[in-house]
Each structure stands twice: as C-alpha cells, then as structure tokens.
Length: 253
Image 1: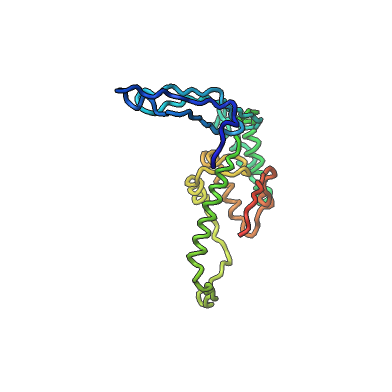
Image 2 (image 1 turned 120 degrees about the vertical axis):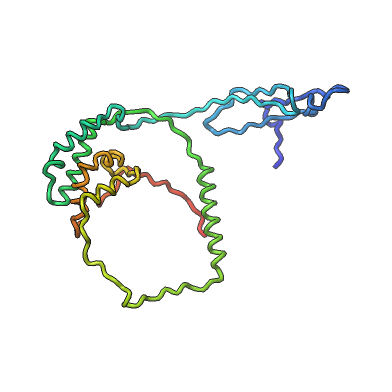
C-alpha cells in the first residue's frame, strides 16, 4: 500500500551528498530524500529521533528515544519478608486443628481453612502495593487463536474421508465395579504432599510450599479429610467470587 508521507508535515527528510570521485559509496547511501517512519503504541510517545551520517557502512544508526505512559493500580499481597515459619508452626501445633481436630468432615475442612488463614494473617499480613499496569497484547491473542484454529482445520482435513467411529459396548465379562475405597495412611499422604508441585489456586488458604513445610502437622488432618468416604465437603463446593471472564468473539466455523 502506497502512502503519501507529505501529508505528515512533521516528517523530516534525510539527505546525503553524492560521494566525491575516489571515495567509497558507503559515504552516501541515500541519494534522494527519505523518511523514517516510527510506529509505536498509543501509550508510547517518540521524544526524539537522531540519525547520524554513516561511518563504517552505508547504513546509519537510528537513535530513537521513547517515553512510555504506564499507569498504576493498587493491590494487596502478603508480607512474606517478615514471615517466621518457626512461630507459625508452633502456633499451628497448639491450635485446635493440631491438638483436637473435629470429627465431622465439614467442620474439619472449615477448621483447616480458618486456622491456616488466621495464622497467616498474623505472620504474613496483607499490605497495599502499587503495580504498574500494562496494556493488553491483542496481537498475541490473535496469533494464538489463529494457531489453534489452524490445528483444528488440519485435523478436520486429515479425518474428512474417514468413516464414523465404531464405539460399541464392551462385553460384560470385562466390566468391573468400584464399590469401596481403601483408606490412605498418614505416611502415604505425607509422601504425596512432599512430592506435590508448588502450584496452587486462589482458594487455597496457604501456598503449597507452606503446606509442604508443615507436612508433619497437616498430613494427619488431610488424611482424615481424604478418608471421609461418601462425603464431599460443602466448603469445597464453591468458586472464587473475583473471577473475571474475558469475552472473546470467535468467528463461527
């Protein structure tokens, strides 16, 4: 697409003189006026553009100075720098959760969450912080959507000539039933906790690394929750209330 750059009065042409006889052509690469076009986002301002004459080659170095205009927003995070694990573990052992946990699974799960949250509020309280806001990368979303759309199209094209799948019932002789669960032991739960990855979700009262550190105290409690067969605690039947869903318009295919 051809653009008429004369419609931009602020554009400055760059001209270099024709090289004198006997001198290298690197002394003058551009014989006619040329324009430098700098494309930046709406949150960026070009403050200066400097193009010195070429020295070692027929290309010049572009010295571009920009100013970013990023805002900030307030948020809260835990004060982990002052966290004392020894004091945390001591109070956890002395708590009702560590000494005499409830026998009812719903009460046990609630006590587990309340106790860990309250102790964390004491030893790692929330504090207000300011975080820089960054503009969303719409181009990345478009590229990612195009990538997966292309993968789906390739799969459909490769299976277009295949017949429908044959999903028949299996013989009754190979069917099995699951009528009971075998209780886990504290040692088994302890090993699972220690081998667990460090990722966690916002619903967890404490981060996974802290659960792994306090596995000696928490393993018996988690074992009792796991062995409460036939009951899914009501406390776990909820979702975060601060989830934000980004509405995306996808072309119907």
